[in-house]
Amino acid sequence: MGALQLWAFSGRTSRTNYFLIGTIAFLLKSNLDRLIATYLFHRPWGLLNYWFPFPAVAQPWLLEGADAQLGVTLLAVSFPFIWLGVAQTVRRLRDCQAPVWLSALFFVPFVNLIYFAVLCCWPSENKKNAGDEELFGRDGFVGSITEPSALRAAVLAIVTTTIIGIAGVYLSTLYQGAYGWGLFVAMPFCLGLFSTLIYSYRTPRTLSECLLISVAPMVLLAVGLLLLAFEGVLCILMAAPLGLGLSALGGIAGYSFQSGRWMAKGRSAMMGIVLAVMPLGMGLSPSIEGQPSLLVVQSSIEIDAPPELVWGKVVAFTQISEQREWLFHTGIAYPIRTTLTGKGVGDVRRCEFSTGAFVEPIQIWDEPRLLRFAVTENPAPMEELTPYQHIETPHLQGYFVSHQGQFELTRLQGNRTRLTGTTWYTDRIWPSAYWQMWSDYIVHRIHLRVLRHIEAESEKVESQL
Image (cartoon, rainbow, N blue to C red):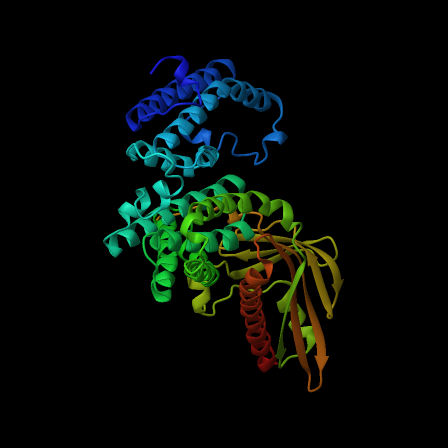
């Protein structure tokens, strides 16, 4: 291959040449970038920086100072390598008799690694004018590896989809810090649909087969997230109903597509759309979700003691010795005790939880009727249940935030008191309606743990009078 042909879009490139050109170009580019970052900008630079160049800033246009200068410099240096990569990818696709538009996958993070490996393994195709069928038809590459064994097709579908899923979770959570529609809705549906399309490449499959193949990658993905220390057991279990349901829905969609005549030659377009929609949904998710709503949870209990006695147990309750219920053995933070400095507005109440302390400046002190406080500091909402000693996932900080709380005491007949606890909070995890069910339930159980302790302590004192 001549030097000029390296940059030309016309002609063909064999898989051997494509591998050699791509490997050499990557080695040159990575070392050049490392030298620029290290010696000109005094910044570390490694392989992961190609997918997460500036982890603290999700949008590149928000870069400032030296980071912005480094970004512009590396972008300028990358132009000839981008031209070379796209040109050689177009030539390689032409050599495989595949649609040239598939070169767009060159720009999709993580997917382009699998894409490069596949093109390096693809044999040259001597047939001409074969079009899309040479790649995606019964005699194409995918068709050849999905038959005659249904097991082989299933393994390919599940493993490929799981790898894409792990990459998607990593991109959304650890890079963007986004726990929203893209992660919990778009990704499960797309993964279920994509795995079904792969599995049914060669021959139509039954509905039960499609459902099984669509759900299996989500199970394997959950195991992978746990082993790779991306998430803990409880978070995975809470997300499971939503993820499994939507992946199954994607499997049903894939099954229904089998009967469409257009799918005979349009399957490649469908798979390309699915691969594009998932990262697009994750990228757009934070910008369309807006600010979370202020949510309220209220819990009540009736106590056989007057408000004047109950009030003393409310403002600063003692160590809770009651046995923890099953929920608080899963890692969810639970209350232990409170301390109070002073007795009035502006004084600070500290509510100690298993993961740290809520700092609560008093806003209203209306003894013995109403105690209201702001929350200026929040501990982690949970300690991840994991096979490792400790993991720190992004959603543990700043996603679930308590803003305000209060205790209201209402006098009842018979020298009794209705004690009502209220918490105002926000949760930056979407879809909010789904996750609110979990958070409301957890906050309610926390309320009851405190209220029942106050009830027991108050009634104990009342019985001694």
